[in-house]
Amino acid sequence: MRMSKSVSKMKITMYSKVQLPYGFGDLTPVLSEVAVREHYDFHYANYTKGLNEAYLKYGVDKKLMTILKNISKYPKEFRENGGGYINHSIFFQCLKPISSDLNEIPDSLQKLMVRDFGSVDEFINFFIGMGKRVFGSGWVWWCLESNGRTCIVTTKDQDTPYAQGLYPILGIDVWEHSYYLDYLGKRLTYLNEIFRIINWDFVIYRIKNKLNYNV
Image 1: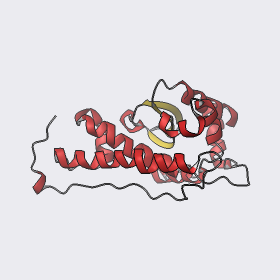
Image 2: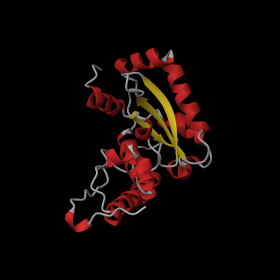
Image 3: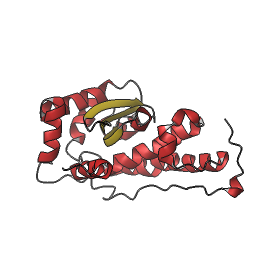
Image 4: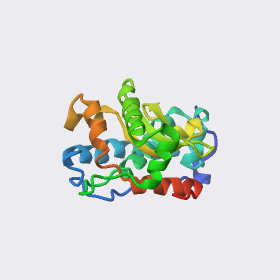
């Protein structure tokens, strides 16, 4: 697919990686410094570079979110690199250094989990189970639906929930590059451990940002 507009006549948005709100070594012992650095500086960087190259190649002047919501209308580079960019941008902000408070889930989020999944434990077990069952590479997401309810979905490769009309509030990478250096093939162990470093405040921020939700 080739876009026909002249690049020189258009304002093209260039994207950069989100700044990590922690150091590469601050997620230990759940994720090692080597694993986080490789994930951020190599994989995430390549998706960011590929996204910017796609904008220049095709002369697209739409914001990334518009593209992702209508991804079938755009070249595959946007699905692969635009999805990779936004997915990783969310993922890295969904994490925080391990703390002494056992990373308790805020009451407001617990209420959502109980409302939509029956209990906090059922939410966690369902989320982990969905992530474990992703065949090959992909993601597991907790998302807001248009009616304000929440759901857990998975996406393949670098597809995003936006294409399904959903708004992701928590996303965990289950590509091998996200966990293999630390857990080898033990994806289930990785998924269980990742709950020790989820940044629940960021999840709340994303809900408020989308719905001005009272949480």
